Each structure stands twice: as C-alpha cells, then as structure tokens.
Image (cartoon, rainbow, N blue to C red; front, side, top):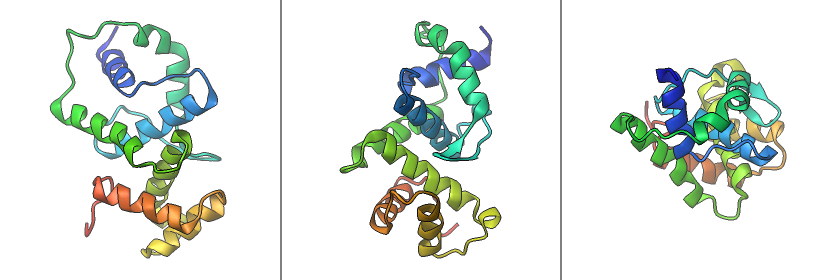
Length: 164
C-alpha cells in the first residue's frame, strides 16, 4: 500500500466514507470536496454534475479500494494536525444541519461552495442573492432561506473567507 492509499484510508475512515447506498456515495463526494476546499488536497478534481460537485476519479477510487481501506489498520500512521482539524470541521457540519437530511445538507453546502468558488465561470456577481439564484436555478429543491443558512455556516466555519 502506498502513501496515497494510506492517507486516503485514514481520511475515509475518519469521514466514515461508505458506498453502501446512493446517499452514502453522495455524502462522500461532498465531504471530500469540502475537505479539499480547506487545503487538505487528496488530488481529486471536481466538475459540476446533477447533484453538485462530483469527482469521477474519486468514485472509481472508492469502488476499487474502499473495502481494503475500510478494514485496514492505520494506527501506525498519522495525518498532519491540519488535516485532522479539517476532517473534524467537515464532520462537524452535520451538527448545523437543522431539519435537513444529511445528504441534502452536504449537497447544499458543497454546491454553494462550488458555485461561490467558480463565480467567474458561472458568470454571477458578488452578491449573495446572485449566488442563491444560481444555485436554486440548478437545484430548485432549495430556497433562499436555506441557502442563506448554509452560506452563513460556510462563512462561520471558514470554508469561505470573509473579506478575502
């Protein structure tokens, strides 16, 4: 097992990554996207798909390796303190979901962040309402109030740097 597999294995275990059902796979995609946005780069590139940011290479990696990685003992290996903190930050987002189902909450957070980080290619302005409009146009199941709550969480938890 190489260093990339070990790092992925530790991260996947700490994020409770599963491929058992669609929601588990969706949550995995969104958690890894959010984790990488904090600077813990696992090397997965994302593009926009029906359910928000999506990495085909992450899906392939999980399907090919998750059983081995989930059952491996990585106790002799450590992540950096920054990576550990970032994992805790991503996992902690679930505590702020309110009435959302977990998969829908992570989908909203990651989708908002993705559009925010790609405002130029989405051709939207800097106003929050522009961001919400772009997201709701793609995902009409969400409303402006939900988007505002999610954006506030992303700012408070420093996934989005205010004033930068």
